[in-house]
Length: 203
Image (cartoon, rainbow, N blue to C red; front, side):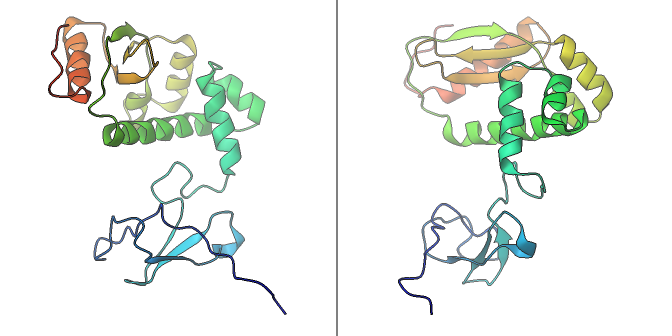
């Protein structure tokens, strides 16, 4: 016989994604229940008791639909963030270079969505602008093959524009493009969008 209180799974940070559900998009309303692990997988299924629709807790994240462990994906992205190339990372973790590239593209998309939602009304005393380079958008659009992208990324041939607060190290804007005046102006415009509207602009 099982004794003690039944374990309660915290679902307050999730919301129902069903567009026809009246609770769609609302968190902490108590309409979600843990519903086991489908097919013995690592990710939990959640059930909305209002619309009776189920979804995996990883919906909308980098881990959704992946059979690979989340720990491995995080380690691969961390390795790339430390500066190791795509082929080197693939050799270390014994995965295909194309897989590493795909995870990198998806991680970039998640970061962009997160930044657009949370980064606004930022108060800083100064902003520093610098340039680097990347190919992720070209790969996603099909303009560059995965094999070509991997080769070019290994050589770091393109510019990535970054604007950051030198005190907190917070990245205020990041964009990819040519090293031109028009591109610099676009990055400045992105920075202006995340600053409070009352902050005087002097670039």
